[in-house]
Image 1 (cartoon, one colour):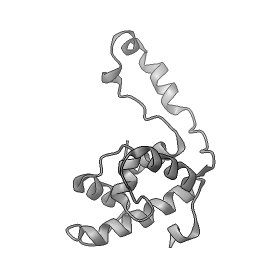
Image 2 (tube, rainbow, N blue to C red):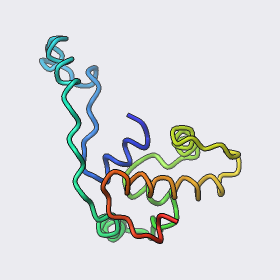
Image 3 (cartoon, rainbow, N blue to C red):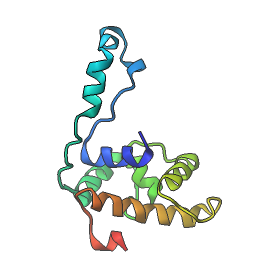
Image 4 (cartoon, rainbow, N blue to C red):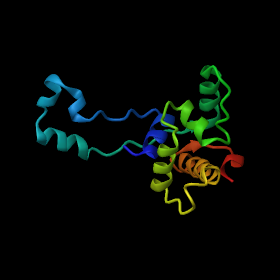
Length: 132
């Protein structure tokens, strides 16, 4: 699953599917036909999520000050995702960033704005000040 997919999934409460090799035991016995039918099922529409309420709740439980409103790193940390430079560069590639990836400050600002836009596009309630 893409990093953006993990972000969206974490916000909207969609579990990431486990790879077949990690399932083990009897679950590996699912036939190829059944697996292809399951893969072809339509994706359910995401329900509306109040991003501020969700992230403020996560921030309160984090035990450390994390500024998810402006920091892509802190946003990813609150979602329990890899926030390393490598992960952020991968996210930038997914989202079509054309700037200098070695200028991490500029890239991070761009990433945060793009992620906020994607959350809103997927049904999240995102304040206007986080979209600009």
